[in-house]
Amino acid sequence: MALLRFDQVSFAYPEAGRRALDKVSFSMEEGEYIVVCGESGCGKTTLLRQAKPELWPAGAREGTVFYRETPLERLPGETTAMRIGYVQQNPENQIVTDYVWHELAFGLENMALPTSAVRRRVSEMASFFGMEDWFRKKTCELSGGQKQMLNLASVMAMSPELLILDEPTSMLDPLAARNLLQAVARINRELGVAVLLCEHRLEDVFQTADRALLLKKGRVLSQGTPEELAFALQKDPEASRIYLGLPGAVRIFGELQRKGGYPADRKLPLSIRDARRELRGLLGERAGADGASTEPRRRTAFSEARDKKRETVLEGRELWFRYSEKGADVLRGLSFSLRQGETAALLGGNGAGKSTLLKLLCGVEKPLRGKVRHKKGLRVAMLPQSPQALFVYDTLREDLLDGARTGDGDADPSERVAGIAGRLELTDKLDSHPFDLSGGELQRAAIARLLLQNADVLLLDEPTKGLDAYLKQELARVLERLTEDGISLLLVTHDLEFAAAHARRCALLFDGRIVSEDEPHAFFSGNRFYTTAAGLIAGDLLEGAVTCEEVIGRCMER
Image (cartoon, rainbow, N blue to C red; front, side):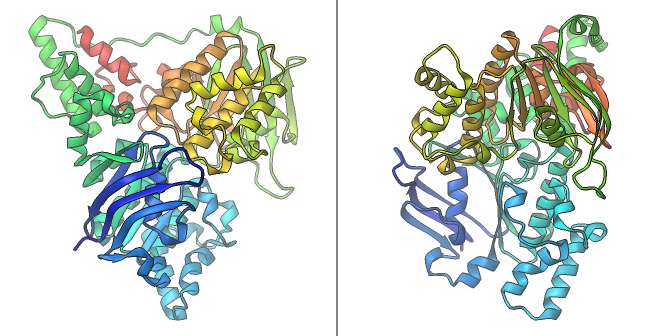
């Protein structure tokens, strides 16, 4: 008997032009781990919410979702609340109490469990997730990674049989994301809890999932093991845009197979370890066959001389900041400058102070000490971490038109809105309420509103959050054109691949200061954790290669 079964499930949001889900059918067994993937706006979140009655969205629904062969609508509320756990995308949206231990006990107390049972389960979860050191902390003092781990632990305290997670790592730094996904894998393997996970970061989940479900425009395009899905997409990359978001190992060796640089009959590696083995063997074979040198190419040194000729348009000198008089210092003597026409990426863990620095640079917050200086007449626009704050009208079209008028450009506002909406695939969403958009669509809409303002400097806090790999490339093209026009960009991001491929300069914020900054090749090479999948695969075999395209190109040259 299947644990969860979708039978011809369709769903349409009110006044939507098309269905978000269209006759979706699949089933999952007890203890199975399924990852749901697909391009932004394909219906992933809508599908997950159909399996949790408390989160059903408003709209027209057809078909039936069964839990142990009983339709969900017939199950008691207590059963769905405890047996089906759900972790949302934004850690802030799910925390409801002031202290960690209160949060762990909240759901259990609402189910009227005996005090002894509540204490036992809370202690068990705190130990399982290693929360002893911050068990009595206030939830507002936690980092993003800790908050999401707390959400996961609070759900697991209810002893669910099915755990649903909607892009749980989208707002986490690489280390926190890896820790969370490892915890999910432990829950599945050690506790036998079934996992239904929606995720854009496929690097880790493809190695642990039993099955992958690929959606496209609300329909199930394909399903099978991660290896089968990767092989199918490698043979037909045009079938789905998530081909660009497949694990680095798959993309590198899949492209090499397509170009004749890797045996067509050899199985594609999924993990970093297996990819390094294959790369070592491939480079050895090439050297033996044609006498090419296997010595790694030295990376090109970062030339600061050319960049120093560019005018500094925005600068923070010796910045100190704390949010309360007796609170801890978030920034401690930090100095940072941004030059005209450059793209700089600011990296660091959750809670390091990256978003705080953006607020100081754009004037939302004032430093306790230090100075923020900028070129006279400079127009600065900022994309906040929560894009909902940018929208005030009932339709996306009105919000974008307001942004276009604020920009005061020479072109007709309607034409500018139509152009940017087309580039970011928002044309069919212009008459929708902004808050009815999916997470990825809302992120694109926020970026569109910002781009319409004709600012000289754009401060972007997690601009790629919720975007699939194809849309990230489209965004990169838009940003590149802006820098060609002399606009300066500062990106706060956890997306290391995006930073490596598109930033001119990368900086790491730690302990309230910039501890390292360099051009991407020098910045990422040699790192063990703060680096890209391609960088880990290339390692000392192809020194200085930090993107999949660079690894593929260097292999084909040999």
